[in-house]
Image 1: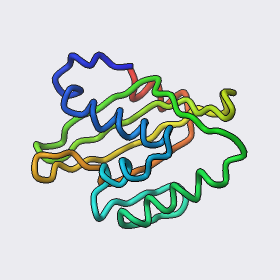
Image 2 (image 1 turned 180 degrees about the vertical axis):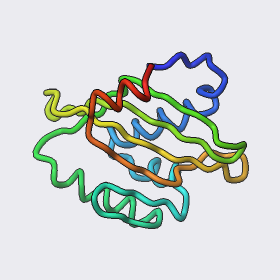
Image 3 (image 1 turned 135 degrees about the vertical axis):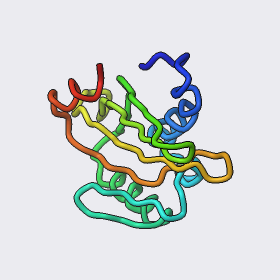
Image 4 (image 1 turned 90 degrees about the vertical axis):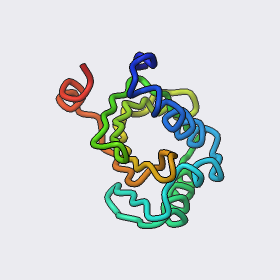
Length: 136
């Protein structure tokens, strides 16, 4: 996990924790509260809009053959402006408590009315070169 004492992480820690908690607990109301109205998810197929993104994630979890859980191994983040930020989360995915995959999730954020919301979700498979590039 990152050093949460660093200034940029303290602003973004709640959305990272709530995002992973909502995935682990399949709490779609929390997830819905973290996503902007015009959010885009891009995982091979693009879905647009909060309801479509949440519905797509529900369908994804319904296809699972076991109990999926997500553990954050590392995070990097940066701010593009006062109203835009990017988070890259290095996640270990477990199915029935067995490690299945390492995944990198990129979240683009926008600050709307002093609240960080997810604007775009982009997932990519783990590649050691990507990890070495983004996580130092």
